[in-house]
Each structure stands twice: as structure tokens, then as C-alpha cells.
Length: 272
Image (cartoon, rainbow, N blue to C red):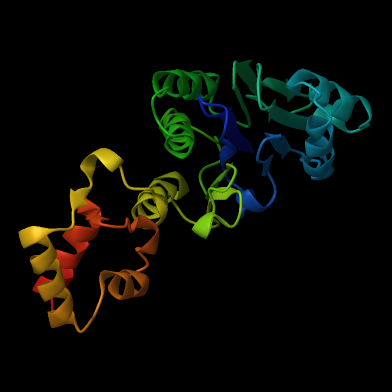
């Protein structure tokens, strides 16, 4: 009923899961991840206990393959389960029980595991792997989303579409640096959930992505005057105050301005 990818960033610091299904709120059931520990997806006739148990095993240093072996050996319902696991290093691992509905299967490699059941065919998993490998230079949230979109375009769940989710973790990557949850986005019920999830990822990047230091503009001279004047027209005494109202505070940098923030400020000024 589901296709998913569990992955690790090229620097080993981010871990996460992207998943889609003809199932209500798949993001509430399938993904689990813990920064510095690992990530997993439990699906088909999902055993939700795998999430807690699997992360506990990963904390002990067990490999992805050993986690799958341990979880499935102790589960009398394993023939109907599907599972993907990635640890903080080494290859990922995937498991498909022999009673999962066709087409069902998966692939795994260094830092990833891809699996699906009730799919249109093996091309779904193959295209997800191709997209994942081709996206090596992307940040993990975008790389997972691209792989999920490739699976969706290849046919995805043969019953149709309903929900999708993206969940990634990284030490201190949460809002304000106060948590490890980097991205937690869900589309619970939508006729085109993977596309909708892609739009949410773009919004996440706008509001919570960190500015590229190479693109920052010094807030001095004519640019500083322009920013001050635009803020005054909008009724704000400082850039911090306006950015807080616009939910752009994560993109503020002392003594400089992110071009995306400047673009939004100019747009707000024109619309005032």
C-alpha cells in the first residue's frame, strides 16, 4: 500500500524518510528517525512497534541489516511486513515479507533503502533508486523528495494516491536550533499528495532554510538606506521586527541580508 525511501545525507548528519501511499495520513504510521541514530520505514501490514524497537536497536550500534533481522525474527506476522532501515553509517537494508501484495520489493545501498508494495511494478523502486543516486549533491530533504516524486511518476501505488510525508532529523536543525527535527511535513488526504508535498518543501526552504553565505548582501550604504526606508513605509522600526511577523526570522544574518528576504521586503513594499 506504500512506497518509501529511507536515507542518510552524504555528510552522515541528516537522516530521514519520504513516503507516499493510497492510505490516509501515511506520515502518522510509516516513518521514524532519530538524529545520530538512524531512520526506518515500517509498512505493508505495518508493525508500528518496529519504530521504537528499531531505533532502540540502532542506538546500541546495530547495523541496518541486524536491526531488520532482529525485528522480523521476533515477529510472527513478518510475512506481511515491509521494512527499510538506515543507520548513521554503512549500507541500508530492506525487507519484504513473502505475503506482501504484488508488486512488492525493495533495493538498498550505501546510506539508503527503498521499498514498496501494491505498486504498479518494479519500475517504481528502480526509478526511485535512479533519482536518489543522481541527487547526491542535494540536501537530504530535497534528495528524498526527488526520489519519492520519481517513484510517483513511475506509477507508485497501483490503487491510486492519497497521502505523502517527509521527515528528516539532524542535530540542532529544528526551529531556532532547539530540536533535531529538520523537516516534518505531511499531506494527509489529497488527490496529488506527492506534488503537494513538493510545494510544502519549497515553503519549508523559504521559511526555515539557512541562507547561502555566498549570496548574502552587506547591509550597508545604499542598500541599508533602501531597507530602512522600505521598513518605515511598512511601519517597522527594524528588519528583525518585520521578519518576525513574516516568519522569515530563520533567514536573518547580522550585518547582511539574504536576497530572498530582500525580495520579499521589496514585494511587501510594492503591495503596501
